[in-house]
Length: 282
Length: 331
Image 1 (tube, one colour):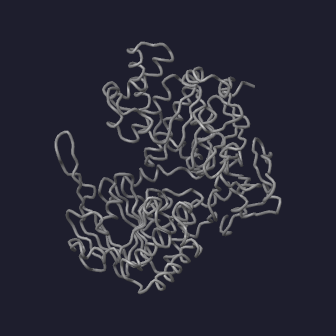
Image 2 (cartoon, chains in turn cyan, orange):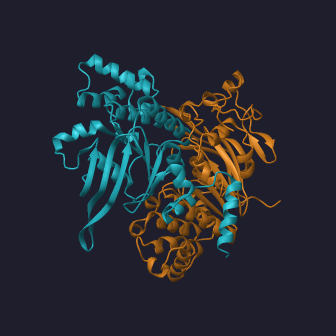
Image 3 (cartoon, rainbow over the protein chains, first blue to last red):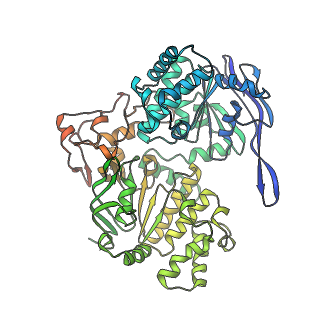
């Protein structure tokens, strides 16, 4: 499952993540991620699609060591980060940044937007002096399409779409090699989702960003991704160029998933129902 | 013409908040007939959920409501509280987004499904249990005879939503109101739940109001669609007509902003965000985001919900502007 051409930013091999669960029968381990391998090449978007419980978010978290793998390796720019000690995790999280689903809960309500965007600049020591940090904050605000005066506002004063732009600005702050986007559209209004998709694509073009785009929405995945990996029950069951996976799904699960995409138009919905009726005469 | 199952007239809802008066619903008319599905589509703050809660008397205190809501010809809005509870319980079923918060965790699902049947129809507890088993079977829960004695936490999300539907069906209501009933579900489960409702509707002739933010779900299951924005209906139409000839710039923009598989060109995004009910613009609520932005009149004068085709109405002065979508990449 190698990425086509280019240098490899992230290489995941046989990744496993286990969580302890308590049941009536005592403690046992649940494998949320069970032997996952993939690579992400510089400048590409790998779409990781799956339903809830598929392990897609856990996989994303493992790339930043926000959860610890129980087996397998995660290489970032060729370096095995799987067993890096705690003190090196800050350096890892500068190379790999994350945008979360709900910007409402990932931003600190007590701090201004400017403070929140400045935080990673300060933590990673990327600019010396308050003035230089402030200038960088303004540059980032502009890149994500927010006005400079947004820096003085607080999260509750912004719309959901604006808050997600702040989440993206924070992720950009450390000029990461890889950005993990975990369901970045899921809590946004429908009319705002397209804005954020356009922004992410535009930033990728301008800054040469590399994305791992995690989502359950197949249409959004298709729009955002160069390659797609389909995940279910902790496994990747199919990987390939987006067009190929959607037009010629190989795995049964991929077919089920694709068949569940709502029809674009009422006419399409009727055509599908007619097809289904023909296949299984009631 | 037979009477509609449910008819809402000039419904208005406002809430006094610390930051001023929020006009959440501003004069909504809706009708749904026997055996039909009306989809009410809107984003957050559009007033879609509040319309239904207010129409059925489920709003919390402190919310001001006016207008009428006739269920089987009887106005729910003028009914005494006691009468309203039993009448609503008998004739309307509700399915909400989050079954975990609508189900009692300490009561078996069988008791919860059978409760209304027992109380409202004066049946015995044994009858109610039999009815619960039958309903669980109908909504496709395997081993209904055993599962009837399980508790909500012992079901998966999709199965819990089926339990909610079974509960809504218990008294064979004439109307089902489903509010974002599949939003929290995975796509494969969502498709199953929608099929289930459609199937039961065909069998029982139930009228369904399907409230959703997701226009794409609507295409496959609705007969009629009402699109809401800023507490008003901005477009109302049979489903085919809406997708083939959308008239309101907001509907056009929503349809145009959807990603399509196989097309990776930039999306025709709608700028800005939905209006705040505390600060609704005086004219067309969509004017600040509108790609057409016709003239000063749009900013100051509220367009009427006017006919633009057969059973098709739109609240815009610019229904005839063809495909005016930002980005210009629409076909």
